[in-house]
Image (cartoon, rainbow, N blue to C red):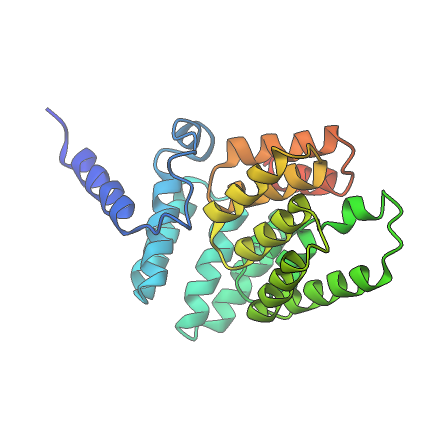
Length: 255
């Protein structure tokens, strides 16, 4: 006979599954058994529940879910970042800043990755196609200027303009599919459509095994709470020589 507490947890988890947007959370590809072992029983479920309440504007309930996650694992930066976001929406700015300050002490990269306040922070963690265009000594000055423009659009949150320029490059066949897939994957990651971003990166990896692609797919998987596969991707990126990933792996995956 199962206890009422267990039934309550199951109902909460099922509700989270029903409300979750498939493009946001990598449930199917996540290792569900890793969560309880690493973060405490149900902590990821509480984080997901908080996210869903946050999307619905139910901020008090979101904060309660994040509080429950903190109670189970008080040293996990993403929870504090998400709770700060909910508190900001309620005007509890001082409390929100306290959460962010503590999150920064735990993991500065988690603040950049999980925060919805500054797109430039998340964009700065991503590898772009220039990671291998520069390796190939490309002398196409116009192309580099357009890539810089796309990066600027993304960093400032002008994602529609970035999308139009990427599509322009694709239509004129100025870049190969691998480069376009990486640009599009980055765009969908910034739009919080993590599963579509993962699909773009995986498709590009079918054409070219490059550290930049593994790195960005790892970040997308971490954002969708698939930490096992995400951290594995970051390690693979390092093995392939993508050096910027070393600091991020140590910060995001070794807590």
